[in-house]
Length: 235
Image (cartoon, rainbow, N blue to C red; front, top):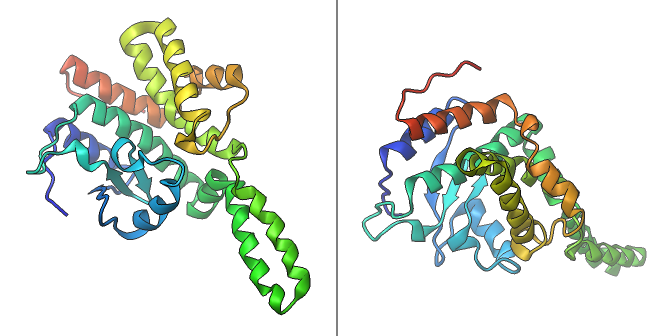
């Protein structure tokens, strides 16, 4: 894996987040995916072929970023502030993962699709014929609504809507929330996790009163970059 070179603003943000999370930046490699990401990506790319070049993936403290963010020498080509905004979203997920625990977070995020794995038990029907009924669990592999995943993604995208409001005001923030719903909640990006309840999802995305102290702290840090003022946490 090539050595990457990040701007000071991005490295400062990563160092700042290490107060709550231990992070390691890794580059997605389409030809030779590594570790757990290599396993997970094979399934996700079946319905989201843009996973390697358009999405950041956080897996238990490893932040996997698209390889096309960097040139051949490993220098970041993507705009610094866009990278920070994306990482802020992922840090919300990391906060939730550590609060809920790895297993519970994974079960909430992957429900109900993970139930489809139970269909594999049907291979035991050669010993116990009644286990052929486990094939019925294969229905959960379909793109059924995933309310848990939707809830966790609402929490993550809420901070992006807050940034949009910071720059362009409340009206634009609502337009941005609608765009997020159309692109992420009702598309293959997250396996059609919640194509219904558009008004309710947009209301939750724009509910700035539900931003917690960790998110508020990150937003203050972000604003300090824009204002070129030193940041100090009061939370």
